[in-house]
Length: 249
Image (cartoon, rainbow, N blue to C red; front, side):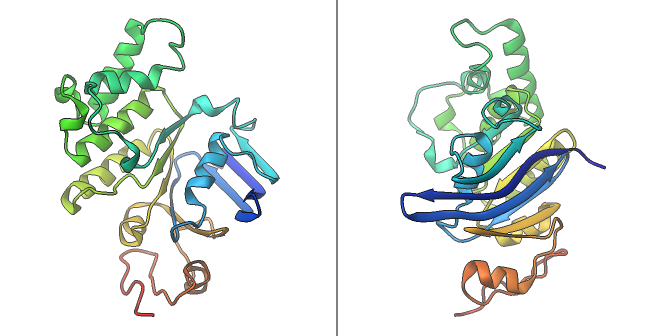
């Protein structure tokens, strides 16, 4: 049986008087590619921050590789939302990826080993030829590859992605998801997305989150799960290609 790398048990989070996550339980196993969909404000980013140990639950338990999330966060690579990046910042692709080694190089210079890992990460995502290019001069798809390389430079065992395909055109998205499929052979991947179609095609498991988590440890979501999460009629065949999605309401 595959190893559980992340486990949440009955996790609830509140911001003041507002419930954000309610009684969420989730197991993520080695080599999973889990897609998490759901409406805006449904708690998806908060869930990732709970896994990272950046948000402490009001109730419930979170285990990362059997231990405390803060202590074991070094095993997790995180790629935040594309829109959070300052495109005008004058830094090269190589130096962006090297910042993924910052925790290991804290208060000291980057080592040859750090540079070797950064180079290897750029090779994995197909961006080594752009290592001297200013990050802001790359296309959206290229930038996302660099941000993944930055996460990979830390040698993670789990990769968390928050809306990684936002702003990327359809052709580049296909190549991007193929890259994630290859990375899955070495690690577990958890991807938050609004794109039901892309998620249902490319991931191995799907969950739907709107404060409560609707999840069956598979690629199947029931119509009632989706309607409960989105608060409107949704039709989706989650075994393969989705057909009608979000009919008029």
